[in-house]
Amino acid sequence: MARGDDSFEEIDIAVKAIIANVRQNGDEALLAYTKTFDGVSLASLKVSEEEITEALETIEPSFLTILKNAKDNIREFHQHQLEKSWFVKKGNGIILGQKITPLKRVGVYVPGGKAAYPSTVLMDVIPAIVAGVEEIVIVSPPNKEGKVNPAVLAAASIAGVTEIYKVGGAQSIAALAYGTKSIRPVDKIVGPGNIYVARAKKYVFGTVDIDMIAGPSEVCIIADGTQNPAYVAADLLSQAEHDEMAASILVTDSEQLALDVQVEVEKQLKVLERNKITRASIENFGHIFVVDTLDDAFEVVNEIAPEHLELLLDNPFDQLPKVRNAGAIFLGAYSPEPLGDYFAGPNHTLPTSGTAKFSSPLGTYDFLKRSSVIYYSEQELKNVKDQIIQFANEEGLTAHANSIRVRFE
Image (tube, rainbow, N blue to C red; front, side):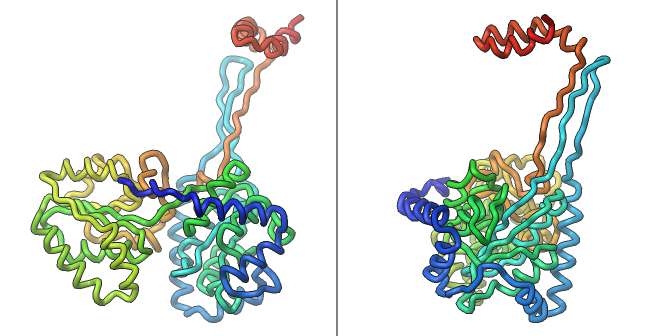
């Protein structure tokens, strides 16, 4: 329950200094930070069309097909989230409504570092395209050769984005928020990143909108005694391999399953490529809770409010109404969390660190804004003018009252 309560004082000092430097020195600061943090000197920040073409040529055709299939699934799901403008008529002279307008320009942060995430490109770009965003720009840190990961570039091309910049970290968030000579400012920034990226998003919020301040990844599994411990262990480890701070939690009413999962976790850990990261995550943030009843399990999970929740139960649909707080819910033994990460269609940018108590997955709705629409005829305003004047006077706002009164003197 304490996750997300860490102090970031030293990180915040560094982040605020980076933001101030980028605001003052623009591209010069971005290039300097790229040399310092990424170990490469760049002549240009923008990814060229030639680099995108080269990336597409280096990717296995079978993987390009997979990216396209995932794109189709993600687009189909997010089309159901589209909102429409609406208007209602009251009486003979009143029209009220809501106008839905897509954001004009959005920035997407795509991490580099420990792993490349073309899935992040698809999950963050496609809802924006479905919403009707006109301009989408991607920022992602370059490697030592000054290139953005080719799988990331391929996913960007398939998603329909060609404005991509070789810059990461807090400096890229500052550039998206305030603009530089190379990178024009955006209206909203989305996408996960390390703690410096997350804190930078916090500090630019208000200048631009953000999706969320994402913490380490997490999975919580409710499993009864009938489940295969190998499945449970594999799903716990699938999140633990993200980074050392990831949390993997099992809640079960079966002590035997808990013991069997412990054995399976150790067995599977030995053969994982990212063994060191995964083991650190399990040792620091891996937990198994044994409870008396499944009702107790749901009580525990709703308090944790996990990013990913798996219901490995014989009757998951019957139990679904008991879930109050979770970013994404996976039902049954054949709906593991990686299905949602890559392919099924629902978004994998999810609330972490308990924020599922009050927030939602990234969606098409995040790239739409709403404007209220109000029309009153002269007669309808006349019918209510005295009430509005009295209301305004009650608040001591006499100019408000006069705005109504002057029309009928």
